[in-house]
Image (cartoon, rainbow over all chains, first blue to last red; front, side, top):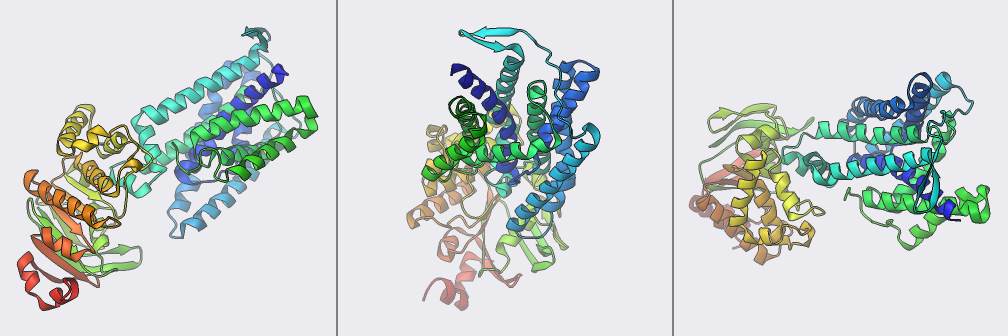
Length: 289
Length: 234
């Protein structure tokens, strides 16, 4: 049982790492990114390929970087053109959904072309175990958790202790006023998009030796991530963090009690029950604080 | 200090200002009045660089600033307080002031903050609190304080009385008047609350259909029968 809880926390830290990117995107730009799962896969595949020809650590470093660049390119080629259209805000949100859905399909097929439909997995590069508080854990999984915690800590320091982070939180509340403060918002939007995608790509990279990668696997993950973000309260980083861990543990322990085939059912059931009680999610409002 | 000459501006194809001119001297309060849609807010946004004028010139301290960006306006000594409540209500009072001084370096920021705390002591006491915990009037003061962080010589205020209880309106307007004389700051104030605006303004412009329909000193405007009838009620 305790092992399932630990596995749940491991899953939860992966969800947190990946869903925080979605929160940044929604919180700051109100973009619902349907291609988040594919960015995660892209990071995973990149790490898989690099670790095959070079060092797996190089893959871990390069993947988030590739994610960051992809994010910057998406911001420039997809976000800005739509944002500048003279149409109502609600129509823009719809356009973003359609555009990122298209991006999701595009990336899926691109990955299919490069890596094929057959699931792949990177080599385990840490084979030993570690013992923490009496619980034995594979080093590879421990690395995932440690990296996720460290990255999330850095993200929170960035958001809550730096000037750019403050500007992002301001931007998530009021665009016009943030501009009136002299903040160069376009740069921040691009940076935000880059960070969001690099988090997703890193998520894919750290699990590439643990979970199987397949071009079609992103869709299910995107669905789960949305459940997490909605449960946390759209746009709340603390909410996403908490609901990631809760749903990770719920999903994992449900395997122990009910069996693997029930884990998705329990996952979404847990989300529905919480939303019935608190329709705005755990933390409520659309803001990055 | 500020001079606006024949400015034509609007949103995209939609032209709202059809050639408006106005000016403001040092440490004065200038009121921009007029019915809804007459172009008051558009004029403020155009002066501050949110909207690029199609024609016309805007001079600030003798320099041509037509079409420059809001950041440039801020660093040249102009600030803008948008319409409605615009404090970042989920951020602390201090974080709001930090954003006001976003373009300052650390030393400049600390000095500016001390000055603001001297003018508004309640902000220092409540610096760690979330801005939404302030009352409506206090939030307005925070907005003005936030604009003061950059040491502006001119502040463009869009409807400071909006959504405020009458007693709060009095307090905010008193503060504006005080800042103008004590801190040597000019204000261009857009207002719907004509009576209150007339109380503190030395010079008044009345906009109508995107043009200045009427202008004059406080006393001269009061002598115009139409103004008295329209806005001062009897």
